[in-house]
Length: 250
Image 1 (cartoon, one colour):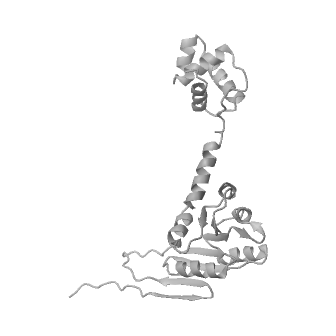
Image 2 (cartoon, one colour; image 1 turned 90 degrees about the horizontal axis):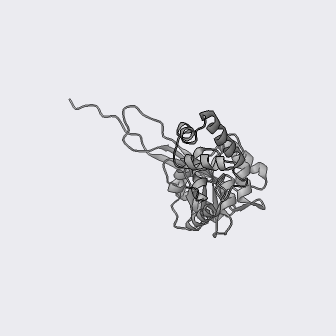
Image 3 (cartoon, helix red, strand yellow; image 1 turned 30 degrees about the horizontal axis):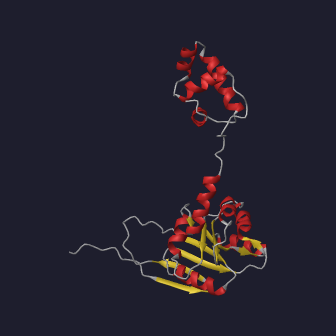
């Protein structure tokens, strides 16, 4: 007798009123069936043609459910978020006469905020840093040939997705940023004893080793280290050592 074969589910899906409803997909499944994870995507886009193009592409993905909303007020956005509970929101760069980054920040302050992707018709320098600070996980410059499935899956998984110019701007902003807690020069003059402790700490000595070399107690060394951290606005011995190297002490 031939062994019994588990039946495979049939494929059915439909699109209605800018909704795509994934039902079942004809794929092999293990003996213990696991419910598929569906990514809900809310398109808040003012251009109907762009929304239809992106929405139809996402509707072809078996693991994505998509809805489009053209809001007239902030209440429309709140209602859509509450009714649909999206995993991802694709937001116009400029919506409701407001910068999309500001709207994204308001969305991010919700209880369980979705990942937000800003969509721009062209790249605008100066966009990406405020957007990143507002909690945006993606910045996409709209091109008809873009594949939206990978974008949505990436941001839904907690990753980021940036257009190349946006990634470049973010890297430049990071390079220009002064590292917190590592000033180029100490703002407070250190005593000779503190400089001696700092030099030994930078060389990798423990408190006991510093105390032995300087002929002091460990508690005294701990006090010197704690005071230097507080006075120089540093957080760890590692930052102290980095500061000593920057100053040429070691």
